[in-house]
Length: 388
Image 1 (cartoon, rainbow, N blue to C red):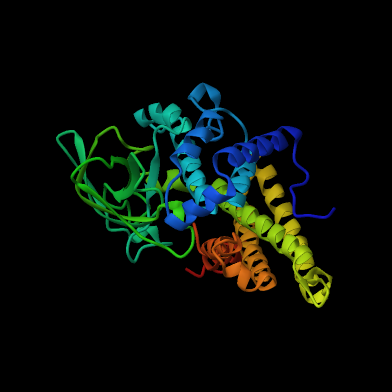
Image 2: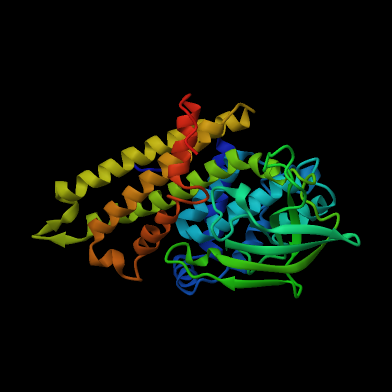
């Protein structure tokens, strides 16, 4: 029977996907996922289970302390998590980014943290955005100064997922003057311990991705050892840029997971709900939107699969990962809207997961980068003048 299920993936990847789905069924059943979303909590139990199963360590080779695997494997895990609790998938993507940075040969002594991050014992978050500074990270105001062998970091970060649970926040800040007017130079990533007086965290409650742990982080002469640089001094933005292809295709996987789950609910409800003596799924007004959804999700998946292949072959995937993120996010926004219309009032009831998928899909339109900025990047890739 036709569905939006995965296709064209290796058997080993299907095994990883099945293992993830089984783990989530045991450690995060639907009722628990709904409660976690409603309360905005963080499932440390399922997080540890993901670590014990080796699923948090897919971003790094075994000899570095990870569990091996490919980008495609991590994409499959991300999608399966998003089908159950999209907020947790956001946190999974962030952890994978940290793993990839820690596995980089030039990362420094913080690379020793990799095994504990892979096990789910140590949690790292990212402090990039600031009030008034989102896409244009070059305008950030956070500063760090080296004093007596340690960094003193001051500034404010916002929209920081997982910060309340994190042991360290990778803070992007200016440590050195810009070189030759190039603002990207002189920015560093510093792993700042959160358990200290100079760091305070305030939870920000969102309508969507409630359980991703979105926070504001205030840094007031926060301290970090000199060797807590993540990568080279003054090249923090370069370190982040190297992770963007994977981050964007992982964001696309979140959208695929949400869309797939929403379509499943749409089809199931259409087959069960009766009106005028027949299932409402017999009505073209309900059938056709579902048909559009499965076609569009399948097209988005084909683009994601193609992008994953390019990344795994070591080919340039900048434009393709951007397109995958754009198409998957826009598709899922439409899919969840159609599903909500099919379910009607039932879709808004807290007993239905549709309302969670509907809310969470909206964040994908502007996170981790807005689709408008993605379009700017693609326009430039087409050879058009830069618009920003």
